[in-house]
Image (cartoon, rainbow, N blue to C red; front, side, top):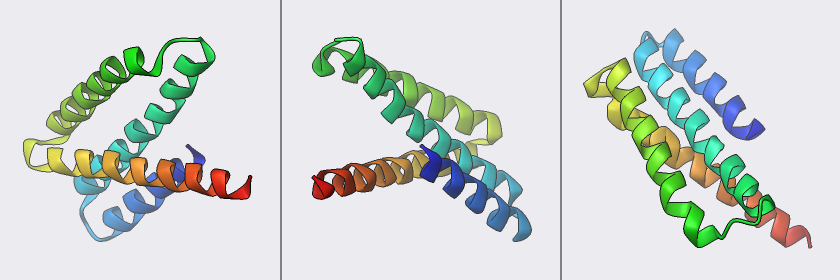
Length: 103
């Protein structure tokens, strides 16, 4: 999550300096929302909830939040929120892979 939050700040600052504040906000929002997926999944596992049962509702909630956030920022920026969510998933996969390789 910390990696995604750091990336969100960097992306927002870089795009804001380039004059694309809304685009930066959209990608940053996507990164933050995407990073929440890992936290929610871990919480479900810790609570003893089946991964199968928790995945679809969790992903549906995050998808609705991402699309809603994108629409609030602007319809033409909604795809950037989804891009940010995808980027967060890549970061989470990289962190998980690194953790497994250390074992």
